[in-house]
Length: 424
Image (cartoon, helix red, strand yellow):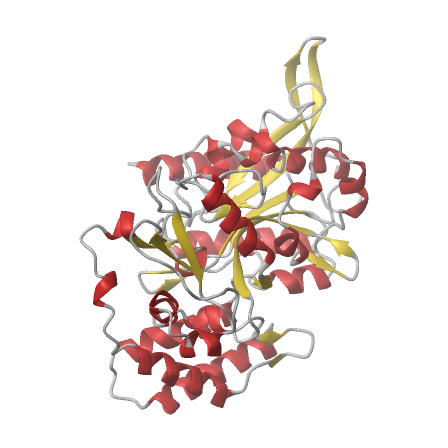
């Protein structure tokens, strides 16, 4: 029923958008009549493209937040368009994405883009508005925002996780504003387990650690967490050799036979659980029970830091004829109120505002202090791209026991990743 409702709303939004939102070079800003305190007026429209089908967003979650923007309804109107999700139909989705990309290339398109890069779902690898977000920045598709951020009176930039926000910058400045992020962590009930290891450490040190909680975390086969940035988009080449991938998988497989019976508890949600991460999809951002203090043991990478994945992000089309109004709308999402809104709570991942408790998190001085420490240990932040998808599907093929050798499986995926980089 929910998908049917979303589909109907999408059709209505698309019809409205097609009639009013074509605004190529030299064309006037589209307007619409609105009832204001001063009577009926023609107000400019700020158009917002929403492609967040991976999250469990209710139909009104986005508009309820954006419509609180100062000036909405009196100075301008906000119109949203929702891209069909991959369950509605791959053809409808691809058609909508092709239309949006064509409009942007022609000098038009929506003013604001709210995006998730789709994850694997039932074998369907969904496409995205920007399959390679970093390339979108370098190709001048997005508006640099530094000047607007500096003048903002509602956005407390210092409260936004710095390592995460840095991923949205290039030589021109901040162009992408990450909304959510995630990384792999194991949680252990502090009353039942004791962490003896000193964190942080490298992945190699995790493998050699005598601490059972560290060993258990390193055995979880979170392949993506082991490496930081794996691709160089400027030179279209992989940053890690094929042999290194094989080596790390063999190390992880060597741990899988370990007996970690002390962690096979009757109530894993309370005693030992996984803090969800957008990069593996489907897990709640935080799954810790209230009133319990936890040890947080992340999956460290080979450099001794944490690899985080961006779940959703916002950006402004460089073609927009309303940059100030567009930024006012985006700014609403990054206020404390916006970061604690139903929209953010329904997105995959943790909001970037560091004062907002993790969704479902057991907030306590102990837990909050640990999590704040982990944020400082992030040394790599990646977007989901076709290359990232391909890298993560390595373990799926290995676990499927296809009869192929490890070297052969890794080689097949590695060649595909190289081809994707060349075509990006």
